[in-house]
Image (cartoon, rainbow, N blue to C red; front, side):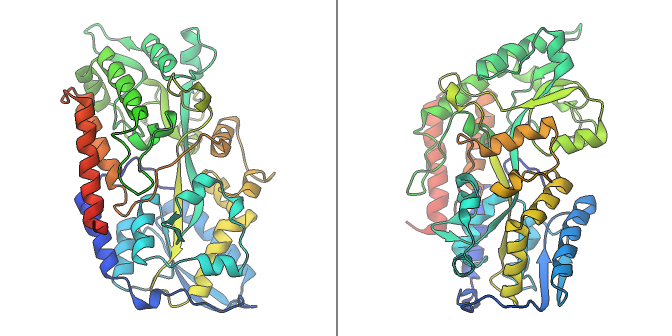
Length: 445
């Protein structure tokens, strides 16, 4: 799975993309289907996905299983097609039957525009039980009551910690509150003779690796959007509590000192990842990091746990941020029945889901796959399965501006942590206005 924090797009650019997709919605995106599913599948279906290299081989192995079970079906696989290529291909009317995206943020404009078809008629006809997916997973695969996508595995975020480093400082358990995280991190931080950071207990800088507003939100049960789809950020004190904690942590070490240290760290998805090299003792990351560690630093002494939560709501502990891949049938699909059959196989067949999870090291999205004895689960990976099932886990809601509302907020948070914001409340109100203006530009008043 591609592993991203908040995508780096400006609100206006995402709004323009949504408008473009809205403008190109076609009349062939209707949802009239045969009253019964075909008794035998036959034909060719075009499947676009973003995976490459080893991960593409995992996808192909599951596609091979589908073809073996349906010998009259040929799946034309187009790998390495990122979200932008997928958007453009659908808009241009290219031969896309089934598209797989790494971003739940496209659901809003793909559903709203008709770029992905409404799957409701297929789901109803074939009696697909949506109860096998958690409420969180269901929430990021539909928009305004239209389910235009299905989930293909999930990313779940938690805390990684170096057990040797914690033990050397006298800690036997990971932190459970943000205050405990800060106290432990400061005790674990060491300095060079010139005062610069040598090793860091935890890097609080927003923008470092997976430190994103979206990933922090569930730690305080913070709200993104109101029931009417406008920004809820400025009116939710949970965000203020999170931001003030993070800013205080940054100030305790020093913004410039943290920036200098961070600039010298290795790339996130290389073997020089700062957690894997021991330069950072604790880190926020997704379940997929377990695969990188197994491959790149198998002797690393580490464990995993849910992320610590705000002190005011300790009952939230155990949850975390969830997102995932989503797949849908293109509005221009020439063989939507085959596309649906493949989509249903990838997202509801327990054997297929478990094989994908074992190969890609991402979290399954159905209850049966999560409980399957064939699922390969290490102690570290098990943490993320637990987070996925926790009632306090959450995600970012779909919006017609995609990730634009997240980006507006995160841009502001970057200014706040650097000391450029004098009035937090006023700044958050301005963030609300920027988000609401972008939403209105896309949807109309």
